[in-house]
Length: 178
Image (cartoon, rainbow, N blue to C red; front, side, top):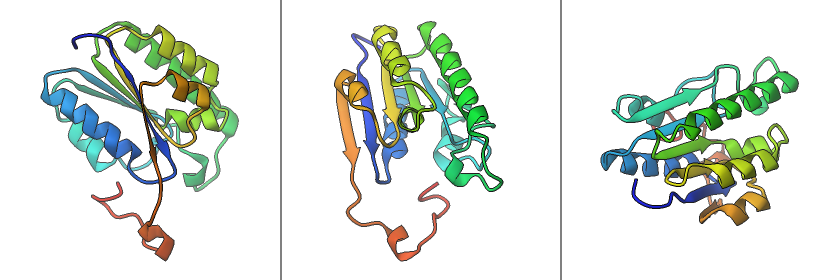
């Protein structure tokens, strides 16, 4: 990737954060760039349509953590201590992989939620942003992005709900919401 890699944040309480990040990843892949997509808090469940398609594209690498599921979606309950350990191990793996300089773009999906909930320290994410390889384009998604991360970012987009079918009881639909 030519030049300095920038930092993107997709945050807010509406649909579209991951979708926007995956769209950016697809754009990068279409231009021959290499992309790492890491999904925090989305393991243990079904794989979304966009991740299924991304995994088929040369230059894309996907990492999901089977032992990470957001507590809202745990049917048997979650062990928060174990979840926190897994998130921190996963973030350590991400830092190691990205320090190699082998990727042009990285999407850290739901990383903002990890920080918001206190499962990952904002200082750890901030130091990673400051130390990332110069050419790495970094995309961070999830609700509740902390102000110190927003300050470090170059692009910040907040998704805001104006109207959503879930308000009328419509369940998530395969191929549209996942």
